[in-house]
Image (cartoon, rainbow, N blue to C red; front, top):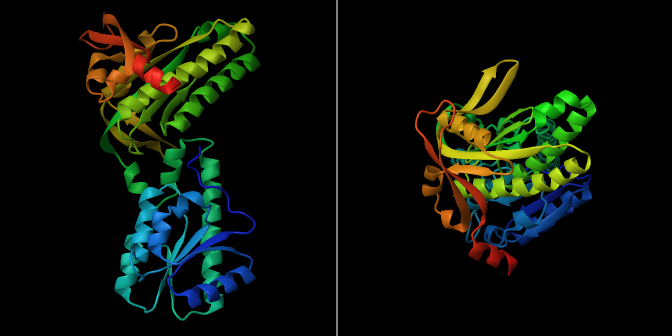
Length: 363
């Protein structure tokens, strides 16, 4: 996924933020002499206002603490809050050895400190160590994200965020998707054909999950469960979930044409639900996964099972709790009975965006 940090280049890029021009020049000369590319800012305020972090692919940031305008603490807090998924090392430069300054720096997310005046060999050793740790972290992330959701992988390698993986309650939107006719197909087809269908199906759904920052909760055969708003907070997650479902439908409708050209009669259905659930890691020492525990997951699964070919089913309750429900065109399919759920459910198929939204997109 896009949120996974990029690998460190052969020539790492270091950002230097300091209001002392002479210090900047000396530091830049030292870094460039030892093989680093350097980008300079004369103040933390300039760095923050220009949103330099989003525009440049820094591998490490060195910042002074006390500067006119925004301080190094504010710069560090800005980077950690806005770009929490990219743990670029931040080194703070201080003029004294005050424990209070270092403690505050650690609280806002600094990784290390350099005290003026400093020895070049000390500085270079610290930078090399931090860059090595970052490189190893990126490598671990790359391996982990091949097997688990990138949102979870990032938290597993980030000590600052691991507490979020403990059992807790959260309001989430859950999406279930599965294929129609897949069981009959898999019984008659060659294993290679079955795997080819699944890989293209996973790729189509996975691309949409990455686009909308969804977390993978379950993947078994043709059944996929995704959820939104945990562990990564997502505003208006119900609406985002519907947009994701509609993108999945577009991708799978395109894939259906390919399957049909090969003589495979395969379709799909999607169901969504929202509500509070218990979230967190479950399993044992040799196996661990991050999952949703509660009726909301079961309800989304039942809605998916009930959906006819190409339908995206949601309940009246789901739509009523959405702030942007008017942006979607729906059709009632009446009150339905779902397996394992006592009360009948007023269900709706999400057909498209509302006409005015479609016209706005076209314009």
